Image: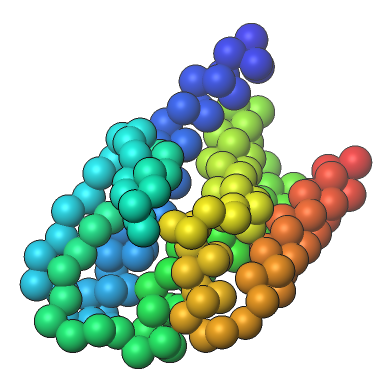
Length: 165
C-alpha cells in the first residue's frame, strides 16, 4: 500500500518540481533582465544549441533587449538551486513532524523530488545544462558547482537517514 502511495505522490511531485524549476529561471530573468517575451515548454522535447539537439524535460525561453552581464546570466542559470537548497533543508525536518504516515510520505517524496532535481542538475554535462551555463558565465570550473550540489544532496539524505533511525 505504501509503495502505491509513494508512486501516486511521486508523479505530481516530479511535475511540480519541473514547473518550479523552469519558473524560477523565468522569475529571476524577469527580475534582473528586461524580458520582452517568453515561452515555457513543460513537456519533454529537444532544444537546439550550436547546431546540436539536446533532450529537455522542460524549458523556458525568453527574449531580452540587451545581453545579460555574466553575473546576471549566472543568477538566472542558478535560480532553481535556491529551491533545491530549501529542499535539502526541509527533507530532514520531516523527522520533527508528527504527521500521519501518508502525509509524512508525501512530505518526503515532495522534498526528495527537489533533491533529485538538484542531483540531476549537478550531474549534467551538456552545453544547455544549468550548471555548465552558470560556470561559463562566471568563468569557473563547472566541477565546483556540481560538487557543491552533490555534497548538499548527500548531506541532506544522510541527515534524514540519521534522524529517522
